[in-house]
Image 1: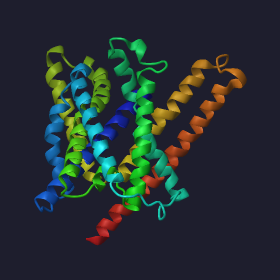
Image 2: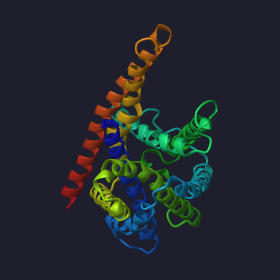
Image 3: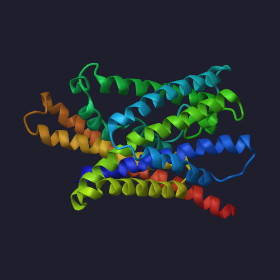
Length: 322
């Protein structure tokens, strides 16, 4: 029960971040091109319409084409972003090698958010024609995670070297305004995240439906699912409008949800499952899991505090400005 509700909160939180990202990207493009001054919340309301449509897809096999197309868009966006990173000589001289200890929890929670896909692992494996290829060496999971780590490391490192302290929650938001190639990259990444929304939304929606479907008459299953999926998207849109700033939101979701389900729970479950005779030589698996538990708790507490403080500062400053 705890894991189910935790997964629901985790992926609904991630979906909020997706809504904010899509809306922020469209906001930057349209406001610049048409010389408008619309608030990002207006774009959240607009973007909710296509999100409502894609949220109604209930089977993974119908989400696969969207996910495959999203991957192509992301690769093209990465290529364009790397071009803008390297089109001029990089200057390392005024870049900090280390920000501050106070920002370290923020870094951990953001990394955890970026890397974690714990809720999608089991559904994908269960729907594969050859699930035996999912694990092992190299395996689908290991190949995917290595690719993700390399891409994030390259984009993150060189993105900071290029843009410094001005780098935003997504480096695509730092691309030049009004330049056609940069606009293509921003549109592609926004569409890619929109297409990926359905996959991330599948997990919590499936869990929630399994918990309540026995209370609904069979002939009402279809309309009930439509209403529930639409209602949750509207709620997520309202939450995204309440906190439409990407960076602290990513840190908060990563710190609270992904640190628990991605690090804490797996370490505890493996320890309990292997106890007491399956922990390896000198109980190395126990020590490994204890380190993961400690790291998860540190990321949970410190990352949450830092993100909440950032959000409070951001909005208190915004209020005082008015």
